[in-house]
Length: 265
Image (cartoon, rainbow, N blue to C red; front, side):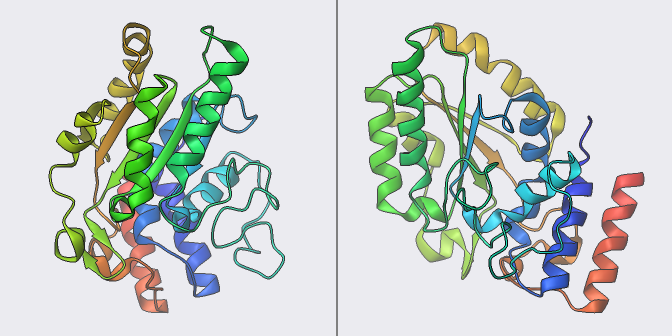
């Protein structure tokens, strides 16, 4: 099934508007990569794993699971005792491969899964572990401990994806705590790093199709930095203000128009 990123954005918009709670900006910036990963990897049955370390963006995961028919409704988003909590909860929803929300922990969890796959399958390893980090999240110290650890164990089955949308809860990342030249920093820890346009499906497809032959020749873990825009898809939402802002009725209607126009153009 071909997944349209803007359909995912519409589902996110609907969820957040109906509950007047949730994170639109960081969910929208992930729409293309989530569409691609769920089309091309075995993330539902669990042979491949996806750790959403920036757990507040979980609406985009609910959106893709709904689009694929694994969720029958999104109406109980953020309801008490619902399986669709405001952050991923694997105890409530089996499609989540880790419970996250406290930022900075997901890459460590991903390393554990990648090591387990190595131990279980030795060198005949086809399963991938994807971990999605936010760029603001990279200000957390535990992330850098994980960046140091993964190359030691030659985790070529681990793919870290950084949503480099350059904005976080309180403003622009460069103004809060500048993370500098991210590619050079991560590469210096022993990773292979690729930076691409995170909203260009052709670029995403080309990059990920080349990961397999690359991992056969190299034992380094791989980091894909996605150059993205927070709130991508709706012009007035492409600012840090839409980290956790919820739309008014007028804003909701206008956002839906923009997303529908882009989907049909």
